[in-house]
Length: 541
View 1: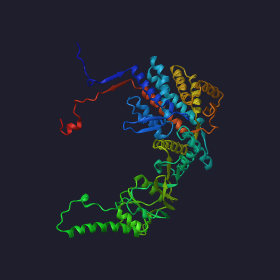
View 2: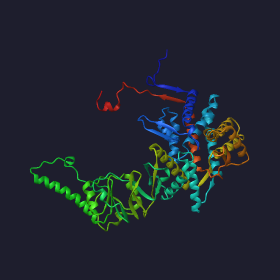
View 3: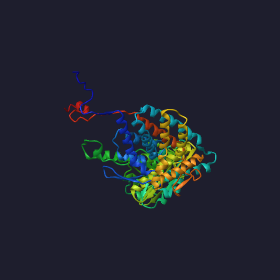
């Protein structure tokens, strides 16, 4: 009798073969099922309550999948591609998951019939290369020479993105705001230079765009109300210095013989603080912003000299102020004087404005204004959070459209065109690849089909109309949600950047190929009896 060789730890769960591939496909379909109904302008929202009891209302695929905390190892691949789509292009997170799940569903029958996954993967990759080439071929480039025409294109792209969000009714208002914000940035279009601030209360239309920097009034001491709240062409000092007295017990232990010695220490501390404040005043500074606290003594000192101060300013707000107004964030005031112009920032107007129940500090007319701030208004906190996520998607899309000016028609039009291309190509291929490419072509129809189902339309009827239109070479015909029919979506200005579709299809195909290539899953159990490495290191056995 041969001895039994044990390689894996006792209790290790190992599953392999065809059943494992099919199990992974089923898990991915279950993930897609969770967000299927959120696609498109008539998509539904999901209310997700996390373990801390915080409720989130969203129809953004990446946000929902992040909050669902998917534990199945293969299904997590779909969560990852949704995150990558969100980070790379901002929109199309639901589409990418649906497409990946549909590719897996269409190839499932071939795996069940005994076809080797490698053959399926090869055909899927071949078809993906073909469709990305087709998108580049049929996409329409907009001329960048005409600034007005480019702005109109960007607004249409932003509106298409916002059409499927909670703020679809106000899409024109917000699309204009998003485009204006992105066009204010420099050539690199850094995302962190667009600040988004949320103020509960008021209506959505009360939201505003500030061409510069705005941030919420920070914590302030007595004397703050006496300070001037409006300056023209102020000199702005950006500090990383604490301007307050510290209690002695917090800093050090001192052993003294008499009271006079103690008084000397107290006087020295006051002298150091007043010396810093005096230098700022002599340098002609009007507005003092610091990342660290500004105490009550300093606040009163500045108020008496008609200077404005704000302490505990958030790091990102301070950096955006620096970018917009110029100057530098300094850690000492030793060498400050009236000639230190390059250290100080400036703007046309600084003022403190009441917005709802909050006060905001505005810096407008900034000389280097390569930054913008959106102040969002709305009722419930969850609603404003969803508005912020929607605007993030729109900002990402507009940034992509600025860099890549090729566009395609949305609303299922481009998917139907690609489906037709692949179906025609599959007839020219011999062997097993023909069936796989034809199945892949059918998978593209999930987008227009789901758009119809979410809007309550007869999907079969609409898809038949679309196939007939595309057979006549009307490549921009897609689903018309408003009329329950098909229409030329390019003429209707339902536009999307071509890069969004290329990225979504590539990511979905790669995820599908990855899941098809997994034929074994090994789960190692967590051992409660074994001592952890950290415990061993600390001799806690």
